[in-house]
Length: 240
Length: 240
Image (tube, rainbow over all chains, first blue to last red; front, side, top):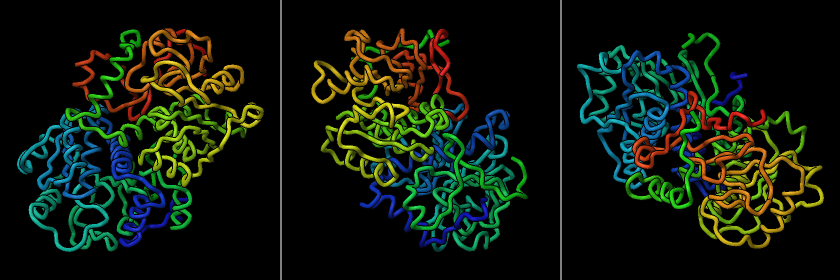
C-alpha cells in the first residue's frame, strides 16, 4: 500500500512541522526531535545491526539545523543500542536545545571529533549517518559541507540519510549527482525527492495526529505493533 | 540477572531524576516524559495487545504530577498503536507542559472524561492505566484519589501501573492493602516497593547515561535490540 503515500513538496513539509509545533497541536521541538532521532536510530539498528559493522564505528555528520539535531539524538540512542558513535558537528547551533543535545550525547558516550576524517573514514567507520540538511534546505551548499558531501560521494562507506539525502534537491532529487544513500529514514512523511529512491527506505515519526494526516491527505502506512519505524522501500529495493 | 538490579529508595529515585534534569546531564522534562510515556505504552502493547481487550477501551487515570504526565503521553501513543483510550485527569496541573500534553492527546484522539466511571468501568474498559502517583508521593492520599484507589481495588479490571502502584508506599510496598496491579512498568530503575512484586514487570526509560548508572550502581539489565522496555518480572511471575 506504500504507493498511496503522499510524497511532500518543500512547502507541505514545512507546513506539517509548523502545524505540529504551533498552537493547534502543541508539540515541542524537544519532544518531536527525541522521537525523530529515536526513529532514525531504530532504522539504523534494523538495517545495520552492530554485528554487520564488524567492530567499526558509526560516524554521524550533523548540520547546523534541525536535521543535525535529529542526528545528535540518533547518535545518543545508538550508543544505548550498543554502537560506538562519533559525531562531527562543525557548525554548532547557538541555541540552548542544541547545547543540551550535545551535552546529553557526550554524557551518554558519543565521541565528538573536530575534523572530517577524510583519510581514515573507510578504515574507522562502517556507516555514516547523514544528518547534514533536512527538508528546509535551499540554495547553495556552503563550506565545509560542500567538501564533506563530495568526500562522502567517493568514500565507499555506506550512508544512512535522515529525512533527505544531503545535497539533493528536496523535490527534484539528486540533480547534482552527489551520493545516493544506502538507507533513508523519512520523517513524518517521505519527501518528493525520495519518490524513486531505490535503497532501503524507512518511515519514522510515529507521532502524527490522525486529524493532521487527514487534513494533509498523507495516507501514511500502518506501523507494526509498537515500532517507531515502518519499511516503505519500493518493491524492487535490495534487501539490507 | 535481574536479581542484581538496584531497587531505589525514594531519595535515590529523586536523585536520579534531579541529575538527569540538572546541568550535568541536561535533559528536559519534555524529552524524558516523552520517552517514559512511550515506554509505558510499549509495555501495555506487549502485555495487553488490542486483541486481548475484546473491543473494550483503555482508561488512563492521571494524577497531578509527573506520573500523570507520563500517563498523558502513554495515552497518546496508545491511540497511535490502535487502542481506544479515555483519560480521567481530575486535578489538572497549571503548567504549560501539561496543557500541551492534554492538547496533544486530544488532537491525537484520546477521549477525556470528567468523572470516574465507577458504575461502568468493568463493562467499558478492558484495562486501567494507573498514572496517579509516582516515586515522589508522600503523606496522605487526598480526594478524589482516595476514593478512586478504593474503587480500583474492588473493580476487577486489570490495572497497569506506571512506576509505582498508586497507594503503595514507595519503599515499603502495599502497606494499606490497596490494589495489586497486574502489570507494572518501572521507569529508569525499579523502586524498593516492587522488590517482591509478582505481576508482569517491565523496565522502561532507555535513556540512562552509562556514567550515571555506574555512579548510582544501578546494574540495569540489557534492553533487547531497539526496544524501549525490558522484562524484569520475577521468575515466578505469571505469564501475561
